[in-house]
View (cartoon, rainbow, N blue to C red):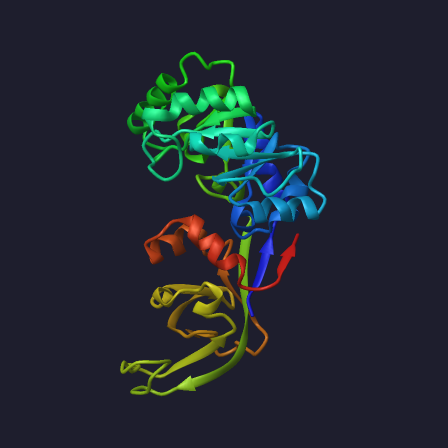
Length: 324
């Protein structure tokens, strides 16, 4: 099984760096992008202004684990509340559900182009009015489609400002991790997830390792793993204790792990183990770096044709987390 190592101090340093520039809403949904939601919340309690999660279950888990002194924004809209805690803030995107949240803390989500959650232009102002009168409206927010693109972000911000005209007394937030790269943080609040964990040039917090289960010499003309392909020459290989069931994708083939002080080519990825090249001195129990100092998350993301968010969340459940 993989060993997922989390540098909790790196997350704190990233958060402090962001907090020097703006108020920080720390996004810790999806188990803090695989880094451990409760431990991350505990580490950021003195730095973040509030937390954001995706679901009621995540908010409930934080409360049950003692995270009660910080506001918790639930990003998914619900038709009715299931938690009565005063620290929970529910997202509203539909004017028809406002009566169910009477006297409860809420935030209005506007759709400015993401087309995921949020009130559309036609009824967004009506929602703001109803929520401000009938609920304890905490804030109004939206989500940038491509926060690193200045022109796209500008259009969304303009749309946001048009909808909220006359409601300037309600705190707003729209900037995400990508906006930090451009240095533009509207309303002085950044709602950040990936930057906390090492995206956009911030310090990586997660490393993934796996032990060598056994080694062998495979002769030329023989296979390594599933399929019809065969080796063109003799190779010494290691079988490593991680596979695609643990988040290490089959498309890692042709890439590398770092083993015995060198990058070693990945020959095959099975469900629960991986076959790689190795040296003559590689032994059972040796540790291979899957992601870390020598193999950054960006390298795997490029190999998988995806983003670092998906790499982190995939590995987050790969094995027991060890905090350093």
